Image (tube, rainbow, N blue to C red):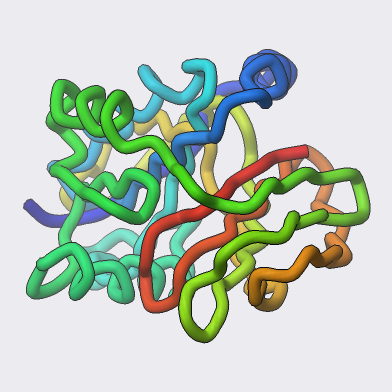
Length: 231
């Protein structure tokens, strides 16, 4: 289990994605994070699995490209150190000795190997967020309701990602000569602040053209995701 590769394929799928998630707004979003790399020969099947689940009602699928396989000869075009750090932070709480690719993490609570579609589907069906605050987004603000926060508060993360599927030709490394599809590729991850249990409103920086916005309220140190929303 190694490597990482993640990206988003497509174009007009953005409108379909938004409509699908909006229709499911009444139920908590299940957040499915894939840690992947274009330099990882084991990752293309996991990318394909994320594509299969990304448009399901109530699912927010995100592809994070990590950087620790860049030395193999191909620098991931979407990789960022903060995405790698997010995965590293998850590992102790998940009982892992270190990061690997492809890895799927569902709601920050459970993980599996990204090329095991049946395991991913089981986690999506079983691991629903609960007891979290209400969370709603407008173009400029995130509104978090009151509730019971973890000790020390929860982190509020802003995610900008490109909805749909994008194909990336790889020129070197383990996937040299292949064009790899990626779904819902994350382009930016920023900590907006914290939630202490009181109702709060946080400003949302504007996303670049073509990018969608998601907000995650999450227990610290790679803990469970308590609430998630997109605008």
